[in-house]
Image 1: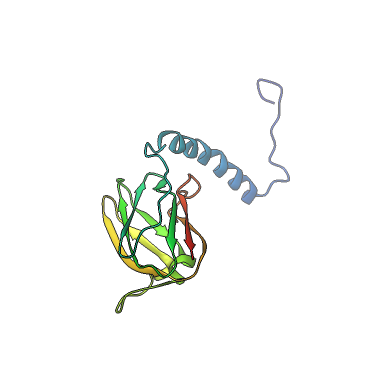
Image 2: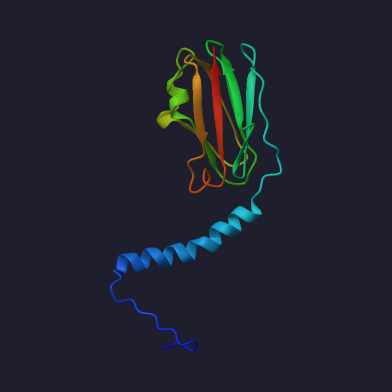
Length: 157
């Protein structure tokens, strides 16, 4: 018995279930704390369709891509410039988009469909989107997409 007349028992619960429950209880305050103090001050924006050869700049901040909606034209070459403005690493993972694009001679699609961008670094890639469609983008680092680090690339005809 406890001070309030309640009795807790673990009978019937496996160690695995107990460990999973304890993990959820332990992780929840951390998730709430990170989410509460990491709100981005950069407003999300929608990009315009760039002309051939233009550079499309995407800022990677703590748990946001800006702009979070990019519109590109199929067959129009662009340079994608990823600028990590945070003190931690991020990636720009868009496997379907990178697979549906062409690259200049001697260049290839990003390995695994994502581009790693170290803290306070910039990475550029030249490409030509070739297949119209809506492509999801996310940061695959632990919990980043859960906290909203997602975007969409629309390739139009």
